[in-house]
Amino acid sequence: MTDNRITVQTIIAAPIHRVWESYTTPEDIQQWNAASDDWHTPRASVDLREGGAFSSRMEAKDGSVGFDFAGTYTRIVPHEFIAYAFGDRQAEVEFLEGRDGVTVRVTFDAEATHSIEQQRSGWQAILNNFKRHVEAGRSA
Image (cartoon, rainbow, N blue to C red; front, side, top):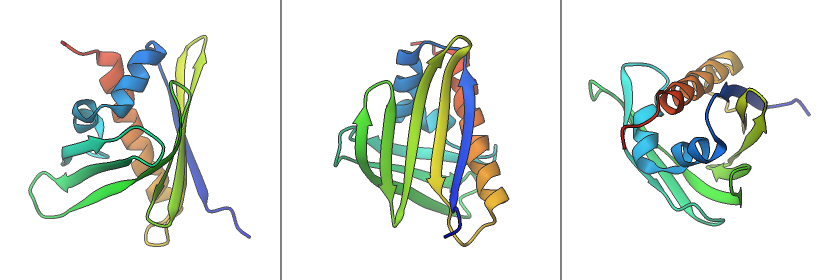
C-alpha cells in the first residue's frame, strides 16, 4: 500500500491557549482559512467535541467558485490534538509546545484530483496564514 498521507507544519511564537483558540474559533477561522489572497472563508462553524461537526465555506473572492470544507471531529484532546473525518478522508492536527513556540502539524489523507505537491502547498499556505494571524495577535 502506498502512503497517501501528507504532513504540513509550522512553528508559531504564541502561547498554546492562543494557538488553540485561534484554530478552533469560527471568527478566527474566517480570518486565516485561505490558501491565497483571492480566496476567503465567509462562514465557519465549529462544534468542538467528539462527534461534533465543523464547516468552513471557502470561496473565491470574485464568487466564481466555492466549496464547503466540512466534517466531524473524531477525537479532541484540548490544547494537544484534533482528529477529524471529512468525506472518506481523515486528518489529525497536533499542537506541540516547545522552546521556540507551538508546532502545529497537520497530517491528512491525500485525494486523487490534485497532485500531492498541489495539496501540500495549498494546505501549507493555509497553515502559513494561520501562523501570521496568530502571531499578529488580535485587537479584542
